[in-house]
Length: 466
Image 1 (cartoon, rainbow, N blue to C red):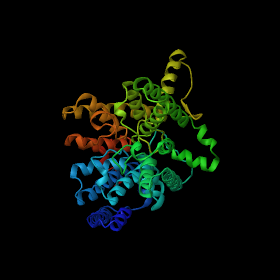
Image 2 (image 1 turned 90 degrees about the horizontal axis):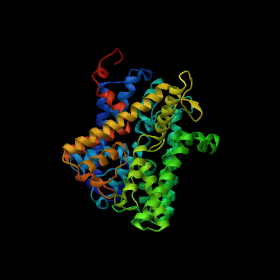
Image 3 (image 1 turned 30 degrees about the horizontal axis):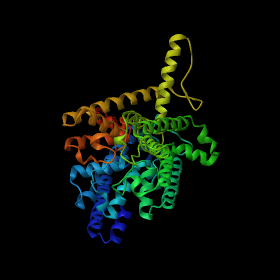
Image 4 (image 1 turned 60 degrees about the horizontal axis):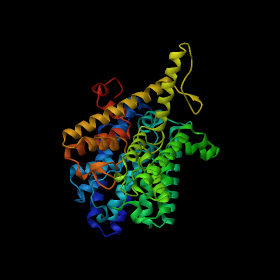
């Protein structure tokens, strides 16, 4: 919270500076109280249960403390502050502010920073910079990182975390430079770079990208959104072994083919149904496919006005998301690949019952437990999408809008179709739906099961560990 405090002070926004000081004081007070309440007896005492607790409760506590600047500054009420904070740290990018351009720079920077910190992962950044948990770091990292497989390219967990963080910072810097060269001012470039690489999508402007940029900016944004949808562990390996590592990665290749194919379909649909020029249709299609597949949620213009076929394909990319180990949300392309290969294997075994074969990804056999885990996650996402949709329908939202908000929230996208359309905000949602949206954003960022485990009574029973 220190950078927003400095910006607020330099901007003579003394009320905001006081709000950030209060927030920092509360963070320090909570830190000392937690340390007094339950100190760690040794860095190797962290097991599976402690790793889940540290990650799940840590994310919850940080998201709650993140509401203080909005509340203390008098910008939002409690429920809306929770939505804004959970949305920021989860990388969803859904906002309840109907006019962000009237907000002071300190608050705008805090929104972007919450996106950036939550994108790579609060715990990953913490391990990279501040601390070392010994063997327990593995359990914490597993509870926070996304995807069916957890890539470890270095022997020590902390070295992995530091490598990921360096790649994250480097891409953010390059993105900010790119935006600056495309015409954005320094403050806008930094803010949008943080929310792009984090695939969060918070903006400091109300309007669409088209209103404050140009075609070069749109292509630049699309490039970095696609780049952010790739595995950061893959980039760390590519840094050491060469760019061929990226092109050999099966998941990233499939993701690029999805972006390419859907962009062509949407382009053709926009030309045929809306009579748009080829250049405009192609640019708009690529931008929005990159934006929604990466779950960033930036908008070039209101895609809620697109023809039905385009909407269906855009929602499909929203549901699928990016690659495992990226900052993107959604189901993850790796899980889709595993599920398709698993189904194909089952069909082959029906024909050849004695067949001994395993599912492979990048030429490496995948443990059966990982494949079944992908299937369980797919089921959990679909089930929670349906439950969330029904909850909102009971709260007075119609069927189509309920499905749209549910998919958008569980995929950590933010914008969608209907009531929280491309250019709308979550301010229109009823209070209960807003609170349930916070829960869904929390679930989706930690990939559901880390949070669900915290809700089981057996998790909190003392098994001799703590």
